[in-house]
Amino acid sequence: MANAAPAYQAGKGSALDVDRAFYGRIAQEHGGRRLIDKLVVPIRSGRAWRVPAGHVFRIVTIDGPQVGDLNIWNAHNPRERMWASRSRQLQAAHVSTFDRLWSNLPYLRPLVTITDDSLSGYGVDDVGGRVHDLLGTRCDPYVNRLLMGVDFDFHCHSNLVRAVAPYGLTEFDVHDVLNVFQVTGLNDEDKYFMRACPAKPGDYLEFFAEIDLLCAISACPGGDLSVPLWGPEARDPIDVCRPLGVEIYAVDGRLLQGWEPPEVPAYAGAHAMRLAKPAWAE
Figure: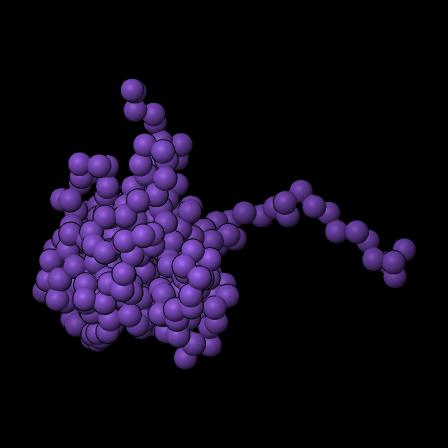
């Protein structure tokens, strides 16, 4: 079967035409960065953190395979947040080095650019699975009640809700995720599948912050996803749950020369709407 061309293609100089030399330097010149903070996300919990524009953050599998569900917001305006479906269209259903995660309308700009990925060599496995997934979304207690008939409060959705509460955000701010370190795909029936996480201790996915960010991640209660979460063989997978690490780095100004935070699109229209003249103006 012929391979179809992607719907969205990068013209030279467009926002999809990533400056690989610039982001490559950010990834490779470790002498040009300084660790300013690090945190541990315990099993079945979530943590949130801020990242200034022009900084780098890295998500790390500390003790071995573990999936994490990532959310990202504009630190100053949480209405601007990661848009998983548009990122999937503009980049790929599974992301890696030089891919970007985009914000929602009406902002539509890159929030982060992926600078490094220790699992970039995973490729496509024997059943079509790939790593770092934008296909699915977070597990949540509502679908658990729907499918299993019981309540469980430590799904990724709930972990993210607890993580962002100290920042004044609520359940309504939690959004579709990037499933970091998660291997997924679509089977022959076009249905979503998940496979066991391939990460080893010390594997990482690294991001460059294009604007000031608030980020949050859940250490998925499914752990490395080697245990079925639903269906007749489902059981509590707590024995395959492991913590995640987050590292935040300041980048030397010399490496940032020529870079500027991205602007929102200069769309000047009003969606073809005209405001009615108020009665008092008649």
